[in-house]
Image 1 (cartoon, rainbow, N blue to C red):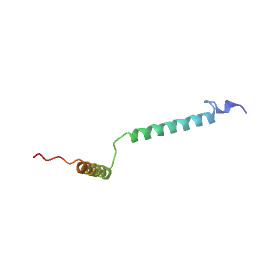
Image 2 (cartoon, rainbow, N blue to C red; image 1 turned 90 degrees about the vertical axis):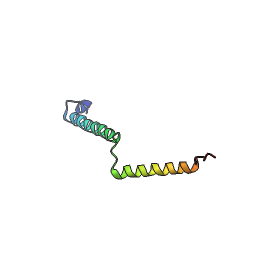
Image 3 (tube, rainbow, N blue to C red; image 1 turned 180 degrees about the horizontal axis):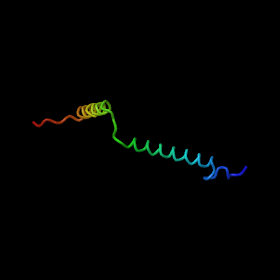
Image 4 (cartoon, rainbow, N blue to C red; image 1 turned 180 degrees about the vertical axis):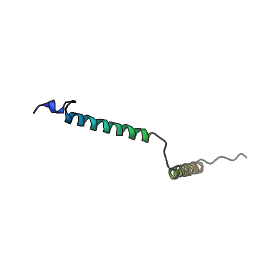
Length: 68
């Protein structure tokens, strides 16, 4: 059995190429969606709340000095 069966013009070779194109497209689609800022409203609120809590903690560690 030779490697001619896996060539790009044979049915199995065409199937392998199509599967490869499909997976490549899916990976590119996933990378595109990961790079988008598509947080839900709940996620945006949670991030804002966490940022405010962090700012409060930092403010409590480094209080502003009162001038006398």
